[in-house]
Amino acid sequence: MIDKILSIRNKEFLAALDKIISSSSSETEIVELSDEQKQMLQMSEDDIANGLLISQNEMDKRNLEWLNAM
Image (tube, rainbow, N blue to C red; front, side, top):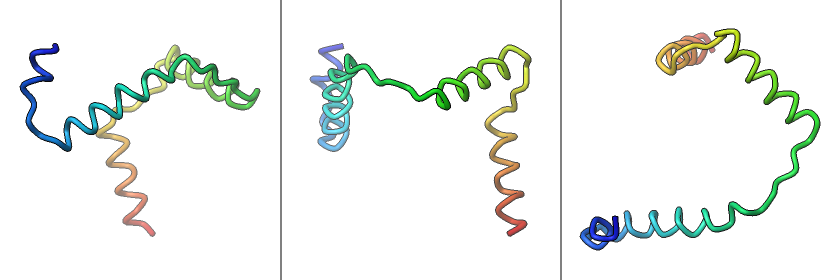
């Protein structure tokens, strides 16, 4: 991995990679969720367990239809 990083010459890509790596070091910070956020996450898990999913393509299609209806 180090060899691959050293071979990158695109400064913008390296800056973005640095930002990602730097931000990942703060992942040890614990974020407290509200009861509403926990409930929404549980509802999402229930939808997944019950197969109530649509593909990204279908979601994109619905969004375009909604935008065109405006």
